[in-house]
Image (cartoon, rainbow, N blue to C red; front, side):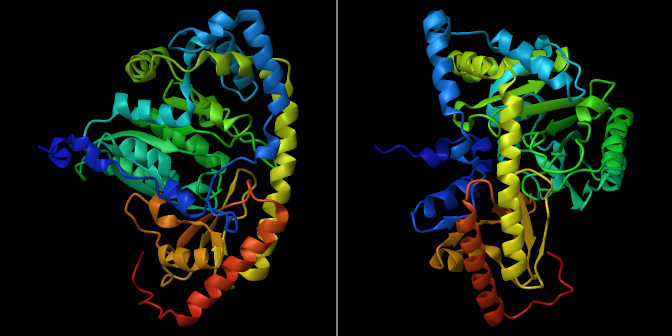
Length: 413
């Protein structure tokens, strides 16, 4: 008798769906397609030689520890190094305040696991990181969405949502924000809004989850303080990662939190994977301990800035004047908005025929709006291919516009 799997799945499985980006990457794996779809770091920048030497040293000097089970909190020397590094960004913490995770994605899952009951609300930017929505959807979250502008999250709208949550029948558990070069828009939150957001969290007693994978990838201007560095009440849980500055394949991220939240996070991690792999933690400590990361980050920033500039110039040349797009000061992404009657999911089908790909923006919207938006990645595409990819995409857009009938402009997406 065959198993009736659909009748066996837990209710929470209904909220799980394939990543739009992962599905697109399958389609664009063909070598002749120029993919602007992924969020992948450039492999030319991976510190392969440094890791080769580090792994040799680790295995020769303490191979047994590297290959053995380890503490759930993470390799203590690495956590101490992280605490020292974070102090330079104004985040005062000790090794005991840090939990090493299997990338920031596990950190998001742990946040959902310890904080969300079915129906609980999360305040998120619109649009927001797709991976966060996937993580929180597993716990049957609902969303209170906040629009963005060029200064990032509209904190005045956050204030309104917090004041109205009970009247709206919501229970807001936390605010999720990416203040630096947000995925997918590339926008950053202004200093005034950062301060006000932390102030609102303090007044309401609602924590902030600050996701900061791109904070070090600033190409121009001064670094702005993290939300965590502005927090004096222990209300900000900070997420970081080595994926964008060292090696994404090792899945090394971390959470900084106060001891009460840290205990719950640790209890959430233990049944999932016991601990993050010791060998990659120990090797990463050896790579990072002598200041290599600082030099390496400077190289990454120069490398990505060139590619960002190439993409922006190509967009200016080849996109229609009706298109609006961000000009990020760092990170990995440009966000574009087309005329309202252009559905970028349909546009993607045309684009793939033209041998270029992007990510339609709808998946970054909890309410599945944003059908005329797209995310473009510049980090993993050489400059000549960036120019050609944007040229192809501009041609695709122009062709689609020529044959599309505009919708009623009074209809909101």
